[in-house]
Amino acid sequence: MRIARADHFVLTVRDIDATVEWYRTVLGMQPIVFGDGRHALAFGTQKFNLHQAGRELEPKAATPTPGSADLCLISAVPLDTVQAHLHTLGVPVELGPVARTGATGPITSVYLRDPDQNLIEISAYDAGRPQAPDPYDLLPPVPAISLTSGDITDGMALDERHIHDGLGGGNQSPALSWAGAPDATRGYAVTCYDPDAPTGSGFWHWMLLGLPADCTGLPADAGSGDTTHLPNGAFHLRNDFGQAAYGGAYPPAGDPEHRYLFAVHALDTEDLGLLSESPAGYARFVLTAHTIARGVLRPTFRRD
Image (cartoon, rainbow, N blue to C red; front, side, top):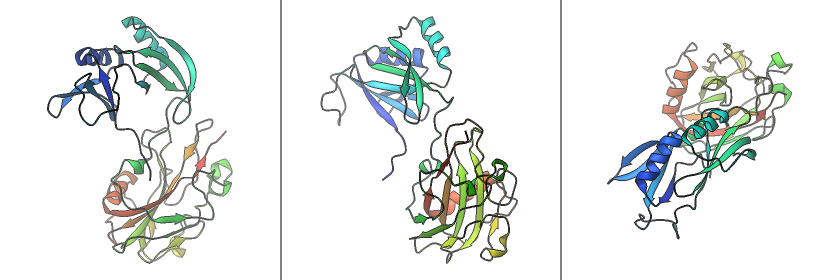
């Protein structure tokens, strides 16, 4: 079981119009109406659904009460800009700025209250940004296959063998083994992706395509770029270093910990129709469309 993110919350309110206006004006949320006239407030990829106190919809909380919520919201602008905005609107700050702990690291927060006296915590990550979502949590769900390695461990730091040689590492891809793919599998692809790179679109370290359906693993350094020891028909796309090979971890100095998502994708086709010069973004689109199962290991690395 793996929960990707929160989708929406329900707020019980005394006055829907007053609540909509406060969240629109103070927090910049987008009022929406859906279903049979229900009201909500959208922000990012989440929303608050609003229930009028005394006329709550079923199912509902056991004892819905206005003012019972305690919400932490991450700001898309610096916290001093938030404070200046609140001051301009005459919205009192109850506490802050104070140091707190967010879902993926240290944050700094200010606290205020909405018209129902719900406690609203507005925060910014001290590292400058929250951790990026896991990209596989945002794709259509597929069955899991077993992916193991004697070189890397889920959630543990990468060995220097798998760090880029620009940082003094070995620049070697890890050994990988997999099992449990569906009977409909016609081939495999192996990738390594860093969603935490400060690019807005992550960073591709490895894209190896054309592995046959009877392939069950790769030796260490299979991503060297020398395809003579790979199964017939296997080839590399260029990674974001510009090389048709594996490129090791190379995060910016002082950046928060990065995750390196080594994935084996079971495919429903022997040929994705991609060429060695196909761009990584387009390849990912095609790969997703043909993936029927996936196994992922998520080791980490931070450069001090």
